[in-house]
Each structure stands twice: as C-alpha cells, then as structure tokens.
Length: 167
Image (cartoon, rainbow, N blue to C red):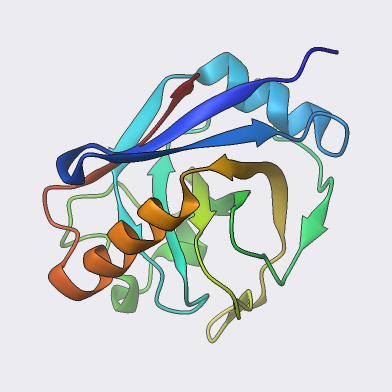
C-alpha cells in the first residue's frame, strides 16, 4: 500500500505538522479516519494525560475500530484514537458542557489526539487506564506544533480548533 499522510493543524495559531498513517499497525482505524477527512473541531488540552491536545467528534465509522496498536504511554508525535460514551465524559470536571460540547449519556464521541511531548500516561482519575489506538506518527513539524501546544496550555484554547486533512 502507498504511504498516506495527513496535515494536523491549529489554524488560529497558523501552525501545522505532517503525520504518516500507520496502515501497517492500525489499518482499520487509519481507513476509518482517512474516509472521514477532513475533520475539525474545538481543541482541548488534556488534564490527565499531560502533553496532549484533542478534538471530539461524532462517530464517523460504520463500526468502531477494534483496539489495534494500543498504548497507554504515547510518545511525542503519536496520533491516537479514543472512543468514549457520554457517561464516561459526563463529569462536570471535564468542562465539556460549559464549552457547548454535546456530551450525553449513551452518546458515543470519538477523540482524536496529538501527543506533542514526552512523559504521557493514559491514566484517568475517574476511569482508570484508557488505552488509545496509535494510528499516525508526526514526521514533520512537531517542534513548531509542540510550541503552539504549549501556548495553548498557557494562553488558552478558546477560539482555536484542531483540524485533520489529507496532505
């Protein structure tokens, strides 16, 4: 199969990076994401995982991908796929309701995340271990994106989005 690449961006900050899809390790997840592109939504900076930004989406695959190429310790440049139900994300501590996100019991949400620095651990105080599917790896522009992610953490995410599109 031909290698496939996507662009991940923070448009308001004018920064992007390029990631290679890991079709050999997570073929079903890669195909589901590829078929749904372009995708974009409000960006959030993780509270628990540490050096992660992500956006939440309505389910876009006909069937949720299986847990292929899982990790609980993502490394810089990893793109991860998570699937949550509204009950898992319904705690007021997450702040999604105040942000206008549709987080309801029984509803499924897909979380597409970019990890931009080391020392991440997918352990959530409410839910325990949260393995993610590693479906892509940044191959260009991670330094600039990491700087923008740090700015997002310090200056805030309001008005910023995280987008994924074919490169």
